[in-house]
Length: 182
Image (cartoon, rainbow, N blue to C red):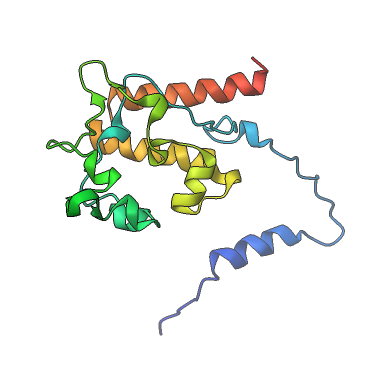
């Protein structure tokens, strides 16, 4: 004769443990600060651009990234537009893509943008732009911008690149500067 015993699920065991025994007092639980849990410092990351990166200037990123058609809501940003004398010209976005996939205004030798102060709106990492292009609410901007930059840097330079390390250090430093009032 075999005996089969069904074990209760983990959730049932945990809730039964919490009930406690009648007449026996249990010590109150102490709250653990979010700042001391795990490996996280609990600081909010604050996005900022780092010099000598340019990962976002690689405009033809490949199939792992959304296409311009998936990002832009204004067709004139991506479609071919009719110009004077009946000649067609590529849209602003497509006109910026060089033969190697990098933006034509990205200076590879200095790793800078030659039109940075006058760059198009879609080259700006700002809360209102993220709202317009991706539907990201302002309260989630820093988290999403940091995540987006990390993904792009990893795809362009690799997960162990100095560019990714510089970015992570920069946003960590910016969040600790804000939390300490520096």
